[in-house]
Image (cartoon, rainbow, N blue to C red; front, side, top):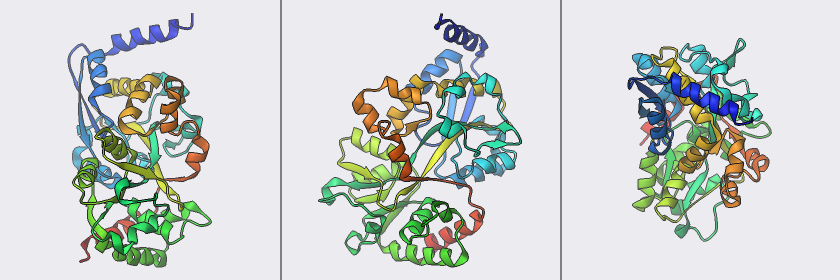
Length: 350
């Protein structure tokens, strides 16, 4: 009897899929539209999925506010701009009855107020993780344990940082502005921002390049232009698959991290198909496939039972509480314009 409900839902899903081949357009982070799990969805729903990728949260906001909102159906904003998607009218409220797997997702994620407003839910937790320190193991006899290593004179021209406000947050951590309140790095004072800027300017001689896509950073490592960087677990997975001697760590200062949500844009032309994709991507077997590609942690805890002990360890699902304690999840930044002004001034400085 337990199989009846899933079978019935599968039949309903198949029946609800369009008979023609409509195009479902995505604007998401890299790795979230990999053919390994998107092609089965296309075959099931007789549709085509067209994906564009963003390099930062600010790029997502700029694209959607730039008059292209109706070009996209599903987006994957992170926790720092999720509220902006809602208040700016860029995302549609969700009918959770159309996403049966929502109730199976981690309560620690679905209970957060990030994507809720006036009794409505606007986003479904999808994947989450940290911004770890990545390093070429051939260049370090011992694993670096502090973000401050990026400022070491011996690493001149061998460092890469993300062209994103996460680098501002990390520098604030190095300066201790996360103590005793980790959330303080998202609401720095003018004086603190000035000191963060000075510290970042000290780092510039060590920076070979600021990366904006996963491909850029993996290329920088593979060509041996850099030996250390702030990155994503996605890059670690990609480089390990290519047998590059890469490792990642969360330094003693801890690190920032994110919860990516799936949202339907307020001007989506394929809302029903968008619901079907979100339900599909929320199911444990599919989330297992996504995590295999990205190295990120799944929002559906049912993935753990589908993994070997080694795989669970690789995703930190066997020590989840301890792992989460080292991550300061992105929050809304009230003075985001100030942070972006600082970051642009750092990039422009010679």
